[in-house]
Image (cartoon, rainbow, N blue to C red; front, side, top):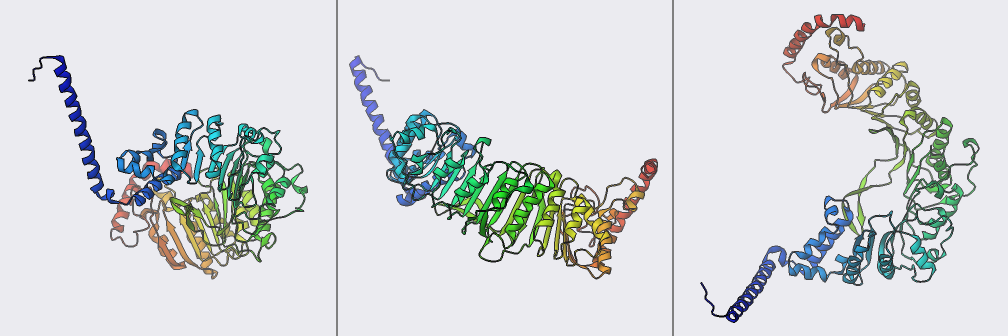
Length: 605
């Protein structure tokens, strides 16, 4: 134990100890730094390590709503604190600091200023996270001061922005700006023109996403160089007449993708007297067109009549409201016009090869019209492929969506009556809720060239289809393939009598329909069944398979008997050697239940 005679000696010794501790700490830091430099990742050249950091920054852009975002908006910053070498690499890589995400609060100003300084002269990507709140003046001024470097900007276009530009305090010139997303609902309706923004120089602008903008505001933001335009209306007061949008879109001949949602005002005349278009919108480069309307879709159909587009253009049409048969006919006529030679750039249209009617798992009816198989291609940003993001190539012709599937019979019948379907080869019914009536199936059965029909998760649709085909055995003369997915082929009756009678069995109706067509020389080439239920031995599957093989060229069986807890399924019925024992056991169980259910059977009969 140390013994010190005076306080001065103690202070001197304490100072020496602190100096020694500081020296040891510095030595440890140097040793750790050298050790980190010798590990495999530490041997990477600084240029390559900077690219890795930049990829992490871009990953944050691609997946902005990851769980870590709510805890740390810039989780990629952790790499700058791993070691001093990594921090030096990050600080000397301007691109790492060029992507700036912020919230509209004054506390973000210091971070924005630091990022501006560290990014040096690199092009900037600036994104406001909350696009419903206006920015503090300090952040607004900081962004204005960096406009000459901004390549991508997502921000609220507030009255303060307009005031700064009108006062001449800042200019809105952005020579590098390529992508612009603005929320304009806070601009007062009295601002019918924005000359300062209209005259701003944006020579590189390619993408514009405007939320809440009226036609004058959108017109001030657009440039002839645009290739992708997205406009979404948030209030009825900003909706405009069709002719206003016609005049605006005529000035954008370079558009490749166009999406308009809730931007059109309701027609001021009845549907039957809507005039034919006198002015056309010719967009020779358009690849994707999306139109959405909260009503029946008549306004969107009226605008669609003005378009002259390439035959390869993929059109998505979404109407949220219910309507009348007259309105559906008007919409279908507009789509049929685009599917014919009229309104098409470059010759004859593509042939219609397939159509799918789908309600998904909600009350929406989607009609998908295909010209070729739809292919997915990776989405690229700044020359990089974004992982897990894909874009559909425009190989389908139309996608029509209505939010009121209760009116799907009127919608499908109007589609079958108006749309040019003479070359249609494939027809799909997918998850259709509600009643697909006989008249709808009769309208589809009159199509002469259908070769392939697929019915998925739609027992009632299959039942009506079988009934219509039994009534019209010569319908669909070219039918070659039938596909069924997720169909309950036999009812689960408790009594042996009703089970043996095959009451309400869809499989019995399928067999009888195919036998009738075979007798008329209209045999089926392929029957594909998968994910079916109630296809066990005691349901009569063995006899069904024997009869089907006699009338069908080839039968493909996928996973079946889904949801059944006992009994043999359709997939393995032909190969099992224990079928007879299973049948005997089932018959014993049925005999035991028959007495208990006899009174119930008589009541049901």
